[in-house]
Length: 139
Figure 1 (cartoon, helix red, strand yellow):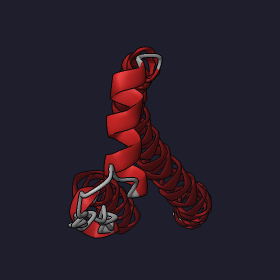
Figure 2 (tube, helix red, strand yellow):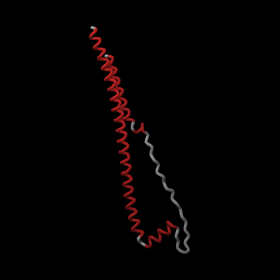
Figure 3 (cartoon, one colour):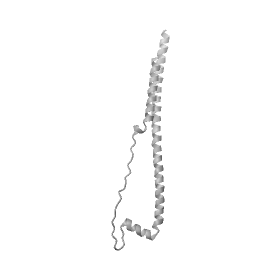
Figure 4 (spheres, helix red, strand yellow):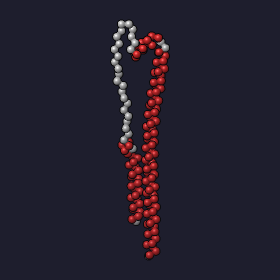
């Protein structure tokens, strides 16, 4: 009988040691998975933003090439100078009305709102692992 109790104590100690190590390992893996998912989402958002910027820049380049061809025409060049640099013909009055430029607002990313599902999944995995370990120790 004394031998069975000593074996059970050794088994419980071993289970406690490996259980604790496995909990830490699962926690580390959950943290790593969560941070990896976060980085992937951030990079995909950045990629999408850069692709949008690329499309806008190509459109702007096309518009500038059209503007270059127009500026080679002397009549268009004279009208452009009158409109943008306030040149006038004799007897003309110039009234300039400026447009207000729209400022782009920067979106702030709320970390917990955006990435709540990977965080919740990681916490649930760690909790279930901890509960399983406690049940094994009580057996």
